Amino acid sequence: MNFWSYFVLFFFPFLGGTIGLIIQTQKTEYLKLFLAFSGAFLFSITAISIIPEVYGQETQWDVGYFVLGGFFLQIIIDLFSHGVEHGHLHHHQTNKKPYGIFIALSIHAFLEGMAAGSNLFSDHIHSNFVFGIAMHEIPAAFALITILKASDVKRRYLYGWLVLYAFMTIAGALFSQFAVSQAPAIENYMVYLVAIVIGVFLHISTTILFENTEDHRFSRFKLIAIAIGVGIALLSTLVHIH
Image 1 (spheres, rainbow, N blue to C red):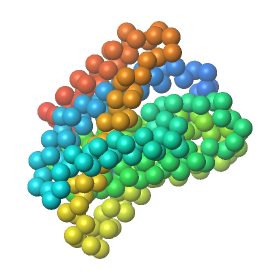
Image 2: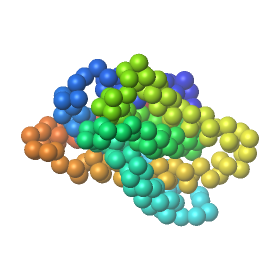
Image 3: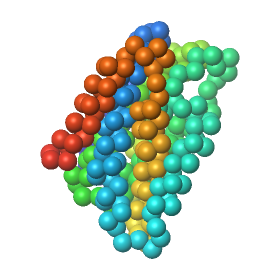
C-alpha cells in the first residue's frame, strides 16, 4: 500500500466524523442520499472488480463459503453496532454510552483494513477496493459521532474518539502486512479474508440500497444518487482511482 491509500483510509472517516460534529442532528436527512450513492458504488465495485479477482485465484477451499460467512458475520456485528456502518442513527439510546457500538465498528474497520493490506489485487483493483472501503466509512463515522454527541460524550473528547476510529482501517492494514512479513505463508490465506470482506460489503451495500426512506420524499433523488454511484464505479474500471 502506498501513502495515498493510507491517507484515503484515514481522511474519509475523519471527514465523515467531522461533518457529524459540525452539523445538527436534525439535518441528517441528506445522509440518506450519500448512503445511496456509497452503497451503489460499493456494490458495483464489489461485483465488477473484487468478486472476479477473488474467484480467479487458485484456492484450496471454495471462496464462496467465506463470502457467505462474511455476509452473516456482518449480521452478527450489526447486533452490537445497531447498523451504524450503514448509517442508522438511534437517538433513543442516549441514556448510556455507546462504547459497544464503537468497539463493533472498530472491529469491522480493522477487518476491512486487514483485507486492504493484502497483496492480492493489481494496483488498479486495489485502488478501487481501498476507495470502496473509505467511501462507506464516511457515513459510518458520521453516524458514530452523531450517536456519541447524542449520548452526551463531552465535545473535547469527540475528536479523540474520531481519530482513534479513523486509524482502525490503517491499523488493520499495517497488522496484515506485518503478519505476512513475519510469516509469509499467511499470504496464501489472504484470499479467504478478502472473501469474508466481500460478504461484509454485500450485506452493507444491499442493506443500504433496499432500505426505504421514512416518507419516500427522496425516492427520485435516491435513484439519481444510485445511478451516479454505479456510473462512477463503471468509470473506475477504465481509469485508476488514486
